[in-house]
Length: 327
Ligand code: NAD
Ligand code: UDP
Image (cartoon, rainbow, N blue to C red; front, side, top):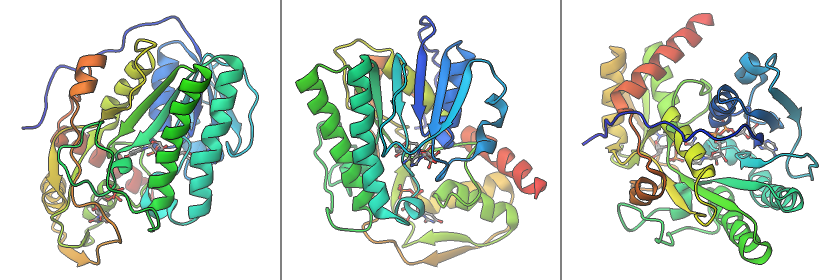
């Protein structure tokens, strides 16, 4: 069953000065917008590797918003109350393009942001990932599952980088009493993705709208669970606002599992496209299944997704339709 509950709302809190690394990326843009709308001051730090200035164009003139071009592999000295650490390419084609840099941003970037948080006594949230479970041998995945990860494959720069970042977060917490929050984000989609992002939802939607074949990797029977970006951002904000003693890691994702074949058929139905399916080789170490157990998020954060796949995909299709019409 897809979840279809009333949309939860964040607990209001006094305005904060908030640093969002990777703030010009897909999730970062939505997060910055929500934080600004709630009256917070937001400093977006991004090196524009996969992020775009155009993503944050609507925020640039806002008096509560500031943007700084900076690579978090280098130290940063700013004064804020909270840090959301999102900087890292998330699409496999982008994180595998320069894998050494992917590990660097995950590990050196985490060390720099944790060092900053320690110095200024800020609360810090890490955008971790379901990839820490690798190609999971249990389903659904709960936070106490240690994962099944190849340390030397093409996905390892991201998977192991993110695992090491989690280790650093928990060591700073134990060693320096830092207030940390770790979110394990499952596949997230929605308006604002780039047409050439390379992830499955944007690929299939753009292909369907252009009348091109939908590229199914492998047999298409591998599964993912897709969370609409507004739901995910709500979960991140709730996690940041949660009790000091709740560190996570906590899964944030939509527990509706679907195969890539069924995803393709759903997108064809919603777009009304006559595109065909074309089968292509499965990338190395592509996980067979991904399904979050979100009981911890439900109990600790009062959070669960409220956007069904059909609704989220329809909004995403409308966004790409307008984007492609612009040329
Ligand atoms: P994205 O690629 O759209 O955004 C990442 C942002 O980080 C970009 O703006 C990029 O320019 C910036 N960045 C990269 N390296 C940087 C560096 N060295 N210094 C400063 N900025 C840098 O990805 P996204 O989908 O928005 O993901 C955001 C975060 O959430 C990532 O950490 C990702 O690992 C995590 N996550 C995302 C998903 C998902 O499905 N979208 C799933 C799991 C985890
Ligand atoms: N995939 C696909 N066609 C595409 C892009 C991706 O079949 O054009 C598959 C991919 O092999 C994986 C799933 O879709 O099994 C999700 O891929 P994505 O790159 O979006 O994210 P991942 O969860 O693998 O990091």
